[in-house]
Length: 208
Image 1 (cartoon, rainbow, N blue to C red):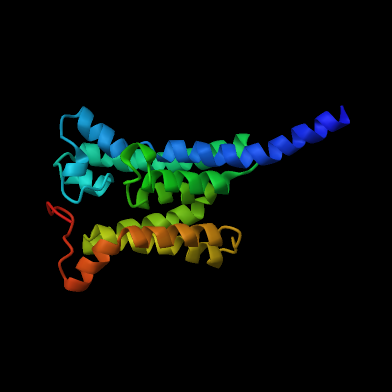
Image 2: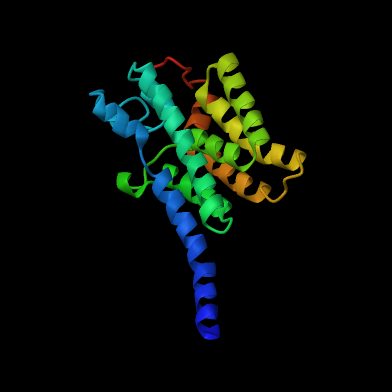
């Protein structure tokens, strides 16, 4: 009984983090933008505009409702991964968060060519600490309204997450949020090039 209990405890210690990461990855890898546009007869999202699977590119199909649904669903999958892991998987929510983000950015179903992670990261941040989510939303939506440049707003929001976590004293969240913010910036490297050239399109443009 004692040995069996030790083995069982050891298995739980090892399996729970793996299960949390897998749960997060599977949720994050659901390509809602691709699925919704295809179901609505709007074509293959990967062949439209920038080819990205996120809400900004869905907007380029002219379907505002689909774009809003994509944003909310991409946000929700990050939020759900954290909440489910926190409730069922021995508090491995940070691993689930990382899995969800990686799943969105690098989904196996799309040959690892996914989105840029801005909406999914917001869902993650909201689930980890609601006040951070509020800061994220204010930065993202505020800059989007003022500049109408999705890439700038998204990158700024992502960078605001680890900064806000440090300001509010949640230093345990800083390493993960910093890593995810860096990935968001990396995923926007082509946008950064266009920003430097002054060629980055604004919301409503058909390209970029």
